[in-house]
Picture 1 (tube, helix red, strand yellow):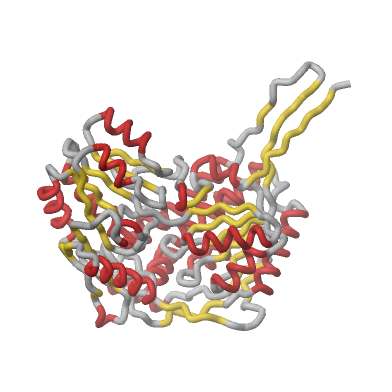
Picture 2 (picture 1 turned 180 degrees about the horizontal axis):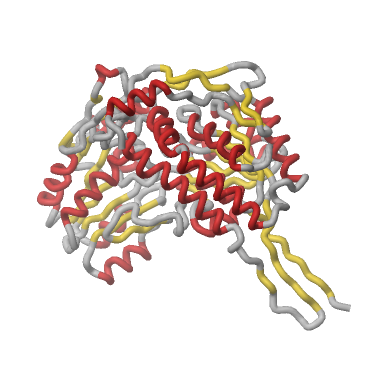
Length: 496
């Protein structure tokens, strides 16, 4: 990777995308309105971005519907669609440095993470679904000799994808790639806090040969562009990753419009459970710290509840603190930085309010708890750990979406599982144990869509991603995501 000074020079020279991508063209909002895109690194305006509203969303949906109905994409042979998606992946790889820089500038995440994690994963997702699109087979039913019955997957039509600001390109491709692979048209609404990589993606897709209108990118505010997309009578599905509050609104909008399908990946309050027979306490301590501090804690699967057996608690917490003390907020564009800025001033203050609540509720602060690097004008919060967190405390129940870890202890397996499941969420959970019976019991009893044993966030694109309860429904990743963007049609021939 380049030096800090070289990266800063590249950032200063970079042309920042700000126009919507609608029907094959880069365009301003129809109203001419823009919004200021604020950089978390220093609180300054990066650029001004087209503020899409209902008219822009409507133009994008019309383009997407026209492209779908005339078959310019869905009717291409699988081999041809596969070739276009592979070309898109190749162009993303060719422009990987640019995409990583846009991602770091927009989100405040370390450039090393954007370059080595976010962008490569987005490229891998595109390639995975390019290869997967001709692997989803239909079914032939057992029928009487006078009949032939089969079921086939068909694309839904127009998919609206509303994606979050914490992993903008990565999460976009979790939805865009399988939706396109199935033959759908897509209208992508990036988060207003992080629109740039999605806008660049839209331009690269056109360069890759994706037909006009098949992928449209409309930036704008959630209450305008997002709501217009979710209420649109000609959108067949909304695929969303974000907050539970917005998820509820999207379900309401779907019911009030055309009963479009809704897929929701929402929040979490994920537990990581350390049993006394943990096979590697140092590895578990690294996972406990980075499980909540990675990406500044702005991760839906963040391991924000650490459950530790009382017999090993003192020793284990000391190990976690030793890791946390080495995690120092730094400039996101510095390749040496491993912990950057939070996405916005509002999100920073939200994390600080949760910290204030933990203080009022009597938790014991072990490290952090303060704003950092305030002199830069950026939005930084120091990695923070609280011990003696009550089960009913806000820090044990509410999603912070920031770098704040709450520690609880337990006496036995029953108490550990009871605490772990004592949440409205159910996205992820982890256990550390050398006991195979305990591990299998945990996997069965923990109410979460993702269970990790002796590792955190230890799966990949081949496994489905999604949660139970108020963490949402529907799955990203794996072959299951392809079926999400399809209708299942049953066909029966009666033989005469």
